[in-house]
Image 1 (cartoon, one colour):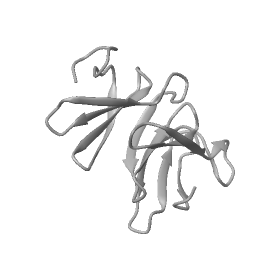
Image 2 (spheres, one colour):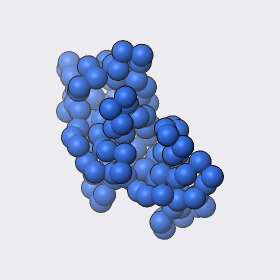
Image 3 (cartoon, rainbow, N blue to C red):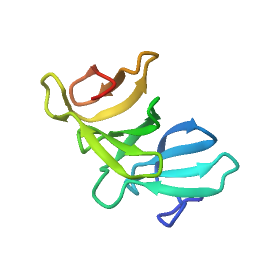
Length: 130
């Protein structure tokens, strides 16, 4: 994508993952995920107005769900591959099951979600079902 805030454009790309010949790119300033075909053609956007607040990273799990490190939303937001909102994992805070400024995430071989947090200076682990 080119620089900008229009359809298929990127303002501040940060996280990226590839799944089934689709490239998912987080866009911090446009507050969404842009999805492209591997050849570079724009496909669609994930994250409607207000659903994501400064997404930092993205991953796709074995259930074909898109997981987003929603940095200022202080949660992991989950969407379908087509961009339909499913739910959020975690709430804001420093306790068990809470996040503060998630910056990156990955999914291990067992499906557990590992999340780094800048606000809590830790790595949190969530069950694959949240």
